[in-house]
Amino acid sequence: MKKTDILFIGLMLFSMFFGAGNLIFPPFLGASSGTSFWPAIAGFILTGVGLPILVLLAISLVKGGAETIGSRVHPTFSKIFMIVIYLSIGPFLAIPRNANVAYEMGFKPYLGDTISQSLFLFLFTILFFLIVYAISMNPEKMETIMSRWSTPTLLVSIVILCIVGFVKLDAPFQSPTEAYATGAFSKGFIEGYNTMDALAALAFGIVILTSIQKRGVSDRKQLTKYTIKAGMVTALFLSIVYTSLGFMGARMAANGTFENGTDILTAASTLLLGPAGKTLLGLIFLLACIASVVGLTTACGHYFSNLIPKASYKMIVLLITLIGFTLSNLGLNQILKVSVPFLVMAYPLTIVLVALTFFSRHFKAPKKVYRSAMLFTGIFALIDGLSAFKVPLGPVQTFTDALPLSAHGMEWILPALVGTAIGIILSQTGKPAPAEDMDIETI
Image (cartoon, rainbow, N blue to C red; front, side, top):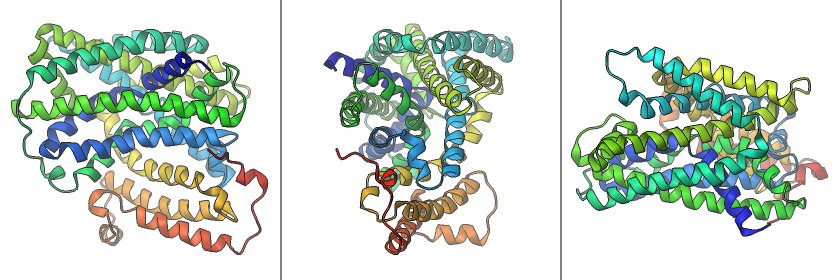
């Protein structure tokens, strides 16, 4: 593969990852963390950038990708887990969230208070999903559209905003809010969940591997090699953009109190560039959200058309766009209320599943280790998710609050380690794993 091919695949992956959450969470983290900005953004980048790249690497190492990794727990678990992931990063959470944010930032600022917001949201989402549908129906052209046109335009727009911000914003960092006063790194680590990119990477893996294979690469070691290189391109751009947006948010904190990242970016763009800033910001959000939704729609289309042989790719894409369009008109606040508790439950399972993949060749009976680790992790991830839904848990909540790292939202780590240890002990009594269970390449 040529270096330009790696660059374009990396840029395509960047545009698929970089959606609504990637824009709105870093500035708010910066404003909230203040003088604790650097450890906070380091934690954010670890889960918002590092973890998705590790997921892609894990998928490239294993024949069959994400489903094979899940099958090491149980084939039924793998199928259910992947369906939930695809539906969540697709039509039921991430897709409508991106469409709503694109409307909130790209069009709503230009509408007066007397205009029916619901009507214009309806009209906007019709146009938005028509564009998504048209691009998604031609996946072979997606790379050209996204990596050679959409992503460069998006990056140039962000660079303009950030450079002006670095030059004009000179206020000192403010004191951190209570949430970041202690444990800024762990708080940033949890905030990185909100990008949903580690979950999206489970779906995007097949798209990236297909793009590499179309260039004549079939050897699995080579697939892994080029996946790593493309992933590093993506990681570099994501890290720079996150740090820049977060830094701008930290500088903007001296200019008032903001409820979320969209408020910060709106205020910053208007302060720095006047009316043109609002237009530039709208363009950034529109490009980012369309590219991300196209990537999610395409990934879901490939997965469900393979899962359901009677359903064609085109039929699935149409269904996804219709569901995404319908849910987008419920409003952003309703979508966000559901997404955060779900992410709290899904991320620990994903982290443990991917981590085990890199060590599975050292387990005598990998299935026992996977099942024990995921059982312990899943129980506490479910408790954490129910807590995020404000479900009263009584003594159970008291017990989980007493676990190490519970104050930082990571009480599942100790149970995950205990479950893994029990699985390793149990695996010593079993028969050696069959070849398919150990089928992972050495980097």
